[in-house]
Image 1 (tube, rainbow, N blue to C red):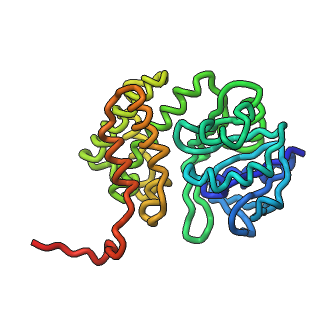
Image 2 (cartoon, rainbow, N blue to C red; image 1 turned 180 degrees about the horizontal axis):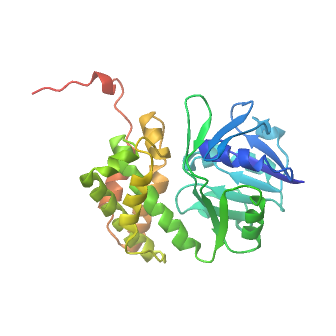
Image 3 (cartoon, rainbow, N blue to C red; image 1 turned 30 degrees about the horizontal axis):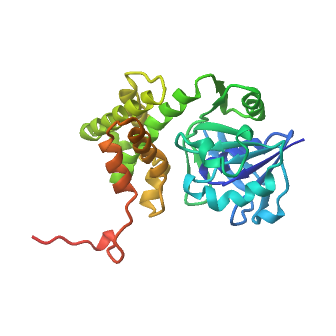
Amino acid sequence: MTTVAVVGPGAIGSTIAAWLAQDDRLEVTICTRSHRDSLRIDTPTGRIAASPAVLTVADDASPVDWVLFAVKTYDVQSASGWLGRLVSPQTRVAVLQNGVEHVARLRPYVPEQQIVPVIVDIPAQRMPDGAVRQATMGTLVVPHGLAGEAFVDLFSATPIEVSTTDDFVSTAWTKLCLNAAGAVGALLKQPAGIAHQEPVAEMIRQVVAETMLVGRAEGAVLSDDLPELVVTRTRENPPLFANSIVADRIAGRRTEVEARNGAVVCAGAAHGIPTPLNAMLTALVGADPVPGFPEEERTTTA
């Protein structure tokens, strides 16, 4: 029996945990701040449910074969206590997060050779009733190697497409182009349908083009038609679909804009590449609202 601990059961973590829990080869545990009785995922082929073991206190945890670390990028430090209890010298730690700094974020807490960075492309969002809607089966991509092959095997009984790549840098920056573009919708607090408006689509293209310049400086091989592909993919989503950064900003929660657009700004600065669009989105999406000024009570004066 392979033991798996999923740290951070948000929309992605819950989806991953529920699918893995369908496999009798695996013993899945959820590590979270608050208890939950079950996981309910509305997948493209119907609802699945699971009731894995749940831990809410890190001191109750013990080492496992795999840790799937799916907390928000800004929660890494606060969730690091789980790693101290779950990770042994034999444990592999898969980092399922946005951005391109997977290994760097976990390096202070886990030996680098045990870290497996994962590029996640599974559109999923938590619904008001607590269930998670998984829009497509999605993909997971990891670097080629023994750990990568073991990660692929972990998902062999699920319909999620999991693969390895010899060029993880290009894969990561391709995904970051999509993530960076998502900040446009977050700034506007609008779902995917906003991309059908051509001025907004053009802004998305420009953000992607700027991100590509930095990614190429980092060694990524990126297709010239990526800006248009990102617009097309955004438009292919249901019009009311809100990706995680949009949903977080609408709900007034902290966003991962620093790990997305902020990562572009930092890498651009290291290469001397100006990134004004990503810098603007990082500042505006990440800005705190002014206390005492709720949107519904705003007034204008002439």
